Image (cartoon, rainbow over the protein chains, first blue to last red):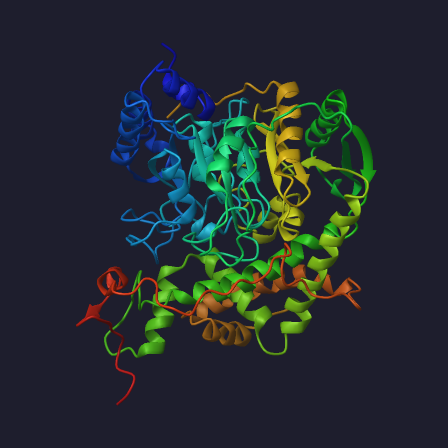
Amino acid sequence: MTDLTDLGIAAIRDGVRAGTFSAREVASAFNDAVAAAKPLNAFLVETPDHALAAADAADAARAAGDAPRPMAGVPIGMKDLFCTRGVQSAAASRILAGFKPEYESTVSQKLWDAGAGMLGKLNMDQFAMGSSNETSYFGNVVSPWRRSDGGNADLAPGGSSGGSSAAVAARIAPGATGTDTGGSIRQPAAFTGISGIKPTYGRCSRWGVIAFASSLDQAGPMARDVRDCAIMLEAMAGFDAKDATSLDLPVPQWEAGLNASLKGKRVGIPREYRVEAMPREIDALWQQGVEWLRDAGAEIVEVSLPHTKYALPAYYIIAPAEASSNLARYDGVRYGLRDLPDGANLQEMYARTRAEGFGDEVKRRILIGTYVLSAGFYDAYYTQAQKVRTLIAQDFERAWAQCDVLLTPTAPSAAFALGEKSADPIAMYLNDVFTVPSSLAGLPAMSVPGGVDAAGLPLGLQIIGKALDEQGVLNAALAIEERAGFVARPGRWW
Amino acid sequence: MSVDTHTVRRIAALARIAITEEDAARLAPELGAILGFIEQLGEVDTAGVAPMTAVIPNHLRLRDDVVTDGGIRDRVLANAPQAEHGFFTVPKVIE
């Protein structure tokens, strides 16, 4: 029999439905794979019993002849940003270490309702702040990939959903939740050769998702291919009265709507995404992507998004500003760490708790956010950034008059070595140069693997779509996936 | 943009994060570099442009003003670093 951990979400779902194998066999195989993959440091908490209980429920439902649920028998990894009742939800931070929520996030509840089980909580950049998974309080996640040039450096799995990307790429989970604020689903997906989609802002409830930047945060699936992403996104999305920004719209049947023919579709190539010093391999893959989409029947048009260069600086005002506000709740009173030295007063308790509980990158962003929101600077920084955000959204609106989706690279490089960029915050921020503009505009966007670089590391292509057109994004990604024939996978060294 | 250690200490106080003199000396150039990077936004002509308030047009919904999940005191307090007699506790704030 094939190794069950080689199967993705659709194959597991179909196999369980057909009785080819039991859900318990699947859950056991993945539980064992998780337990054997400690060197990756992808899981912070393992929950094998949760996965087995969901599997047993799926097997029992099948035996009873009940209608199968959409993800029955599929065990998944849950990013540590999602609150899961009774299971530590720490956003990979010290300040929330040991926090066991008394409630379940809407997205995770929807996945359990769809029949999925939880393998465990996945490591991430602390409070989702980072592009390399080097800011977790619980240590770096190591990518399962190695360069083929003999160098044995530990590579970054991308961030902030690096535990999710590493787990899916290493075949220790068939799918995982991610969250994307400025690219935190797409960039790690590109770095590890998997697929991931950030849906339109508001498609997935943010209720119970530990907040970073509320006007940007959006959950989405990370999985081995486009179909698996469509299945999982259907299970995650939907209106939630508990999130005031949740969109009150029905969830489309994205899997049933998959269609790789792009006849009659126009694909835009934004000329401003040709950044200086982009590796030739990235540019070559982008050109190859153009050819693949043309082959799928699309017409290719060049478009202009003139404010692209200002997206990153706008993001690094807006996201820290919202973070400084959201993270004000960590004060040592209601939950999490408290540092109360003898004789300290309330203000000293707050300041010491936050100094001890937050990591360097989190503090850096809170301080930047506090600065740009402080008296005298608010209009020059924050209001100006929100105006630029309007211009960026208008750029996309104008582009949609000429095309249906956009094709760009996902990241400006392949995965880099851990430690290589951590000393320079701005060099690290530049990793998100292609993913941030669509985040600011709230648009659906997906990364799909396109090929490998000279060192054998995966490279991703990004499809950006109109608001609410996840189907168009998934279909263009599927057209690339079918033509790219990406089969590279990391050799097992852990 | 140059940021001095006095500014860093002021911002840290506003953010309720304790920092040492060493932290302030290290953070000043770091924050200066980041602020220098984001200052390029000043180049953009935004005259007549409305600041974005909602990324996707959506109407703000209001809930009925009723308690829907009361009676769960112990669950609310379950993760408190220190709770006594059914309350969150903090250091004395009134002499």
